[in-house]
Amino acid sequence: MSDVAPRGAEPLVLKVLALAFTVFIVGYILVPILVTVAMSFNDAAMIRFPINVWSMKWYADFFGSPQWMDALENSILIAIGTAAISTTSGVLCAWAFQRFHIPFRDMWYILIMMPLFMPGVVLGLGVAIAFGGISIGGYAFYGSRELVMLAHSLWAMPLVFMLMEATFKTIDYRIVEASYDLGGGPVRTFFEVVLPLVSTGIVSSLLFAFVISLNEFVMALFLTDRDTQTLPVLMWLSLRSAGTPRLAVASVILALTVFTCLTVIMLWYIRQLRKVAR
Amino acid sequence: MTVSTALELRNVIRRFGTVVAVNDVSLNVSKGEFVTLLGPSGSGKTSTLRLVGGFENLDGGSILLNGQRIDHLPAYRRDTATIFQSGALFPHKTVAENVAYGLRMRNVPKDAIMKRISESLDIVRLKGFEARYPAQLSGGQKQRVALARSLAVRPAILLFDEPLSALDLSLRLQLRAEIKRLHDELKFTAIYVTHDQGEAMAMSSRVAVMNAGAIEQIDKPETVFHSPTSEFVYTFIGESCCLPVRVTSAGIEDKKGQAVGLRLGERLAEGECRIYVRPSRLRLISEAALLPNQLTARIHFIEFLGDLYRYHLKAGALELAADHAGSIGHGVGDEIEIGWRNEDMRVFR
Image 1: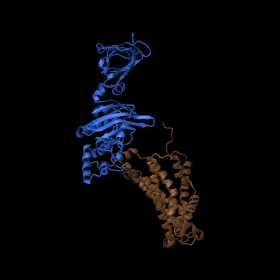
Image 2: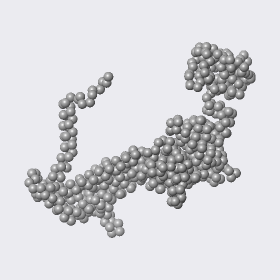
Image 3: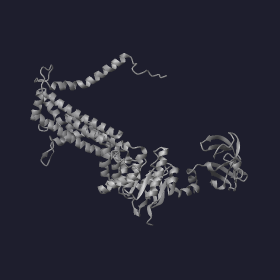
């Protein structure tokens, strides 16, 4: 005889409460996004309910505006650069941690992770002050996209490092030894065996770094000028002058990009799971 | 040094902190020889193998492969190939890609690689599995792919690191026979590490019994089994019973000082010693009567082992076990006579 009550025998009150709670949580998460999406189809000149006329007018306006398209381009280029810089450095750094004996390991670990917990204002201001007057070969570093990429990598690289450090730990080290054993040198082994084994981690790292940079606002505000300002920065500036539904369109574009990234991570993960379970 | 020596270890030492894992090991392996390193865990057998493979650094001595020193070379520059306990196949590569890996690293031309893949898979009887991924193979198949992958590069020496210990018994016996067959056919040179004496006996040209980082005895399996040179080898290989006794002018007594009914054919020198016998070599009741060494003991309990009954016996503080095909018609508590021949007994002090 089982002491466990059969499934479905919970009191009705509990079931209703559970359902209500679930609906509340899902709603809580989705409402801001749904409101923004709805607002982006508003024909009016102001962000305001109710929406009387629906239209794609502000989408046309967004994609027709050189200023907004430049900001979108800046955002995406900076995000790609950040993804490349932080993934490369984070992966190599994590591999070195995994593979070699490193003196003062814990100290280095804290040092690497520290920027992740620093307020964006502190980092943004710090980088702005440090690189404010610096130009290399006549190229002013301050205000450039590259500087924003580096600043964003301060946040993204520790994240990649943390993620990859955990991923590398899952590798059966005998497999790496097998590669050495069969004549694969360290570099070939890294590219032929290690990287494919952690491909899920790499893809996740790239996309996380991309999304972090895309979403980042404070450092970008401190470090960009009119030519290099990112989408969030332009949104903030234009909100102060005119709150048109164009802002909602920009939000939808940002949100869609993030969703796409998450979908790619999911699909990749499922693909890898299939491979192992085949 | 002769041309026929494939591998030579000279006074090899490996320390981990204060622990000496490999303590002054010297070993010669001839071409085509299958040498097993047999020992309990922590005896240094795996460390020795990993030193040859290049996965550990030497703390002393030297290693020569085909007359050339290799101990300064990294693993990927040594002409050795290891079969790991877990198989260590590349999970993201197919069977064919796994087998091809070592050849690609050696820049073998593509058509030659294709030929070698099919040869190697043929040898381990895995034709038709080329496109499968390791996750789609059974444990035994994985180990055979690992073997094919190592054989494909035609190394100067194959290093087996307990390759069968993760498999279940029937598969282990099957693969053991297969490795033996392959060695007879291909005449490769190999070092095989195991803690399973059955494997060591069945496959080896020579067995090196290791203990505490050193080789205790190295010889043909039969010699190691029948003429162990040390107490450790005697007790590690085959089952044995230990009778710790003290020989005095008055007779033989157990550790507690009580006289025991032990009558030996040859007189032992006075003092403490350990007498060893094997359960399979002991004779009981009437069969014991004519043998030079005899002991009167009481049946403590009886185990039924299928083919045999195992009688657990006590004589004072001495405990031993004796195997007998079929029942002897005595039960627990009965006193019986046990006997053995001189050559079935070893005395160590």
